[in-house]
Length: 264
Ligand code: URA
Image 1 (cartoon, rainbow, N blue to C red):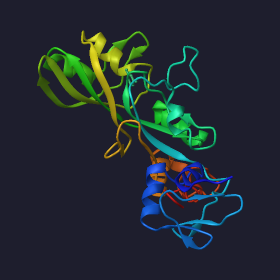
Image 2 (cartoon, rainbow, N blue to C red; image 1 turned 90 degrees about the vertical axis):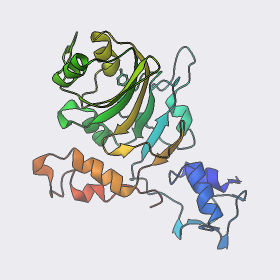
Image 3 (cartoon, rainbow, N blue to C red; image 1 turned 60 degrees about the vertical axis):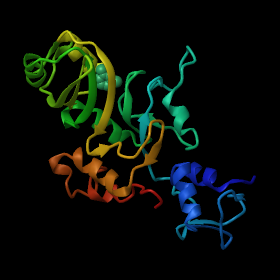
């Protein structure tokens, strides 16, 4: 069946539709040897589609890694009995069974990683690997020095004392305080509960970075595949000392070479 090229490329897991459109516009996509134009359709089962000179097919063994700028109002669950929107609907073009690396609350926005690589996701979520997550937080009122110090020391919650957080860029604007808080744990509603424990109510929460991955030009609701280099860096981040250079380990450099890039 013929479909628009950008849809076929996105479905193959090579790029978002927007990126695929840019490749087509730049003349980097050919169908049966002819340069394709935006709006062209093709049948991937019978036509030879090349993206940047490479066949479209993605080896089945390659895992996929997506950074999504999650909008508020979306749940990080596969389906919602109350019919609320779910983040998976935003990457519906990409075939395969993805899961989220940790969860963001329905009203939390920002950087969310999705992948079908269970081993990496498990480590990235595990607090022992100390993967930093930075949140932009808006609270009502003025955050005083004592509250900042408590965040930096650790806050007592019902499930225990939190690990010390880093607080940066505290600023005040029309009755609110904005701050950036970096934590490496991933407890349920952790930032909101930390602020509530100090007597502050969070009125906006956005994750601006996950490890070294920042949202940058990714607009709300948009997503992109991670590059091969980014995937390698994530692997390195959660590598155990004895896995370094061990080709038998999933987490060795050898494993990382199978990670996909934007259009590898
Ligand atoms: N902390 C929260 O309180 N909520 C989130 O969604 C993420 C971190």
